[in-house]
Image (cartoon, rainbow over the protein chains, first blue to last red):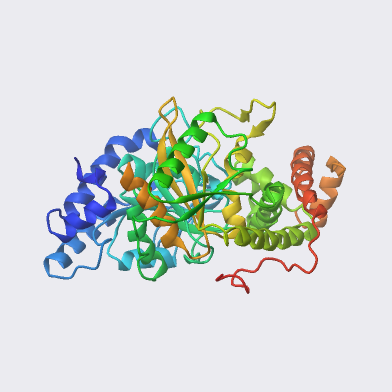
Length: 440
Length: 62
């Protein structure tokens, strides 16, 4: 096995035990970048020299007896929406082609302090406003989309060009590409991970979180991002009450996805969890709240550049931003009030169960040229609606949501299961995911 | 909910401080109509005294 294929957990142990040098690990990852990046296009910027310098520094420190922790000497990638001092934050947009960040975002600063080696900045759907990430191809099948908006981060982790990565998630942008590329993604509780130095899409819905190869890896990255203690992972889920939605989450879901998620839920039951039917509240209002909050907030953020250089946006994003200013303020405020209500209703459901299990996405990665998703009941959805409708509730409610790989469809494309928990109960969500991955 | 006409999209965009070139009126009107159709669904909710969501509010650490 190449060092670049190691999980974070395994790489950290090998570095700590001095069986693997950070320099060897970074060189292996950079070799992998040279090998696959030309066809995958996960990176907007590769910072090879910076990564090598960080690896040498980490190796020297460790040799001198200063071990900073499990991220010391670990190569990682960061979504090109997040500031790293001295590097451009392009948001994968021509609008910010000349941008250079003058200071680190808090998350970049914290990861630097943990001794990481930054491999580079990964592509996003332009300004995180979409689910395709067209610059990047799927890690499993190049004819399929990477997913988005953190598509570059998910593909980097899945393809061995980063041991872990950071993404952002406004309507599913960490979990969707994680699911579509067969890796793990956590959207933490709202406000748990600082967002300063991160280009916003929608302040009320934005989250920053990790993409990794295993759930155990998430537990190692999260404390560095939050400054809090490591979540106590348990593989014992005896008695854990898992809510199984009887509405919304299994409606208009591909049979392969549904079967894989149900099989994973059955596995969790066999591990001691108790399954409980739950009714998901206010599902009719998921898309309305998502759009009526995100639309005006995105336009508000982009107002100046939309006025000065609208031609620099791609036509798709320019249109969304121009239309966003035509949503009345009263509708925006109503959506924020509905967001409060939906959160309250979800918290009521989570008084009866510990977590809720559901598919992350209704379909696996679609072909890159597919524009719509048709369903057997005659309904045809846009790609955005298909990918957002199962993930957006956790953004609206701010609840922690994890996507875990649970197999492949008949074409060999990865499927993700979503585990949603109570506010700040990341340890519970991660324990359930960890128990599942240990059993496979 | 009635759709925005291209002329209305042009007028309201200018009113909001972002005048649109004429060739964009129809496309923006159509997209804004789709967004407003969705947003209008929320009008059927009885929100009573519910306040807008505020991160860090009373229930934020429940």
